[in-house]
Amino acid sequence: MPESPTVPAARPTPSDPAELSPEDGKLVVLARGARGRVGAVEGAAVRDQDGRTYAAASVALPSLTLTALQLAVASAVAAGATRLEAAVVVTEASTLDGAGHAAVRDLSADAPVHVAAPDGTVLGTVVE
Image (cartoon, rainbow, N blue to C red):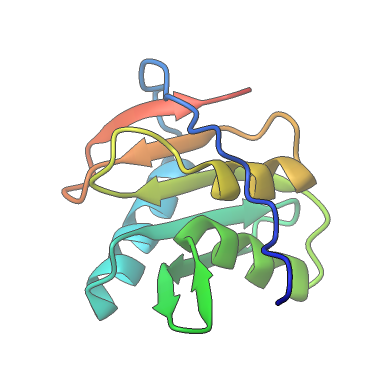
């Protein structure tokens, strides 16, 4: 039987919400749209070093499970991104999933990850 990939177990807790720039506000809109289009558990959006944005929804298939943030980061990398400026996750959870957080940190040690409720209210920001 193949080994399961190691997924970070830590679930970073967002600190008080940072004030969003207009560009980060656009990420909230994109993440909400990605989540709403397919009725997914989560939606996410990231912005790369060139200002390009990538949005995704969580995927839960029998053979593949990805968080929305993992998929948004993967889309950015597949398009040639080497660094992220910011990320947003729209979720009903009060914490950021460890796997999505790790994917963002693979490209950027300091990009803020904003966690927002389904209505778009920013609940907090993870900066570490």
